[in-house]
Length: 408
Image (cartoon, rainbow, N blue to C red; front, side, top):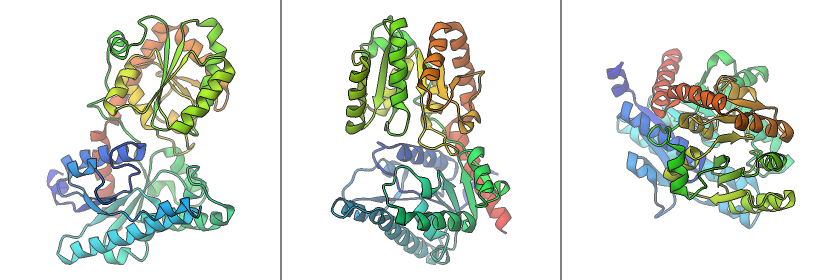
């Protein structure tokens, strides 16, 4: 098996939102390819970069192709089309680069792609240039991706894009079994032909820390109860429900406070206004963007860690879930099937989606039963060991080998 890994000619193509790891997709990509590099020395990593832009991916030997910032034209003429055009241009540049390597006898056997537009082109006409089998890591259907601003005219095109890509790709990887089953139910791809590869956490950063020391280091009160939510962005993640639940709990927990780590300025501003309207502005602390190395301290300082919502449903595999688990703190989590694949009542408290009274009840239960909550947190920590990036890289290589074998 070791010899097979060293001989595998694998390419990994991605379009990280931030080359300095200020976005979840960039962190997931970086940590995945870093772990892959240690197990597959011949790995070829391809990402785009603006001229002179700093990049953490340089540390792992990534090839940086020019990024043509066509998407910025949407500021002058708003349209999702600019976004798609930018990634189309990158797909063609990547294909030409891979063709050049192929002509030199350094072509890839398989190309692992986690960007939908690039995967669409590289699974079609451009596949003849690369000569590589394409494996697509699907994070959501593009036709219902909430992070894209677009008009109804785009919908038929995007539905066709999803359908074509999912049927044409040599291999498809889903983050959850729930999403794999949904693809089958929609007649987009049989679940038996879709591999499942959940997200992971960085074991070098996330591990149990002593609560008192974390609070002292952050300047937080030693007593009182602390709820923590940490995420790079706040939109579509149920933070409004969390503030409503905090307001409901406030009369019964005089020293209760909420620490919100991350968020963009506009998102923070909207939540600050909501906190004022609910009368809990003195209990909510907005920490904004903090260094990745600082986030574990906030998680370690918590009595309860909260996942009030997710951007997607069937395909949800949030990084924070695995990071929370690794810290060994009690978790209160929205109850959706995708998260149930990893968590259950043995290691978390659940509440129905969109119901702030139920969220408040779950938080109260966790706060009032510290021994039970601590046991759940410890069981979550033990379960987290199966979701390191090292384990994820091992599984990814198995998936690639399986797809290459079946395609033969």
